[in-house]
Amino acid sequence: LDIFPANVGFQLPSLDRTLLELSFELFEYAFIPPSSLHQSDTGVFIALNDDFKDSHQTDFPASSAAGRLSHTFALQGPSLVVHSLTSS
Image (cartoon, rainbow, N blue to C red; front, side, top):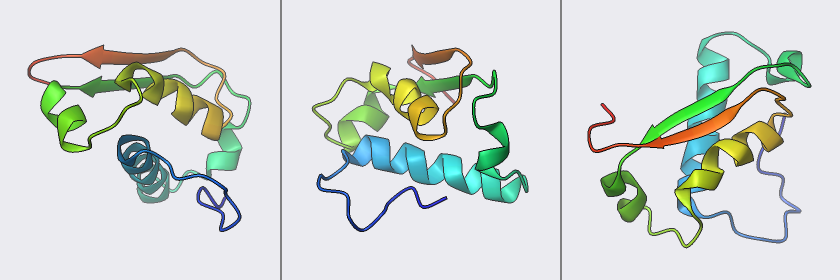
């Protein structure tokens, strides 16, 4: 799965790019091929605080981040972003 094909005609916001790269690394470390979850009821849950969002200077709402991951990996489960003060 090439999540950043060379022929993409737009620049991903840095927050989305960071989350896509991290999620792809998680699949790799867990030895789970992303394609094995295609169209499955797998959910995406992300906790972000304002410091993380501000450091990536995105114009896109952080609330769309989970939906973008679900769309990228074709996941059909719930997608939720929790805004918290202490996400760690």
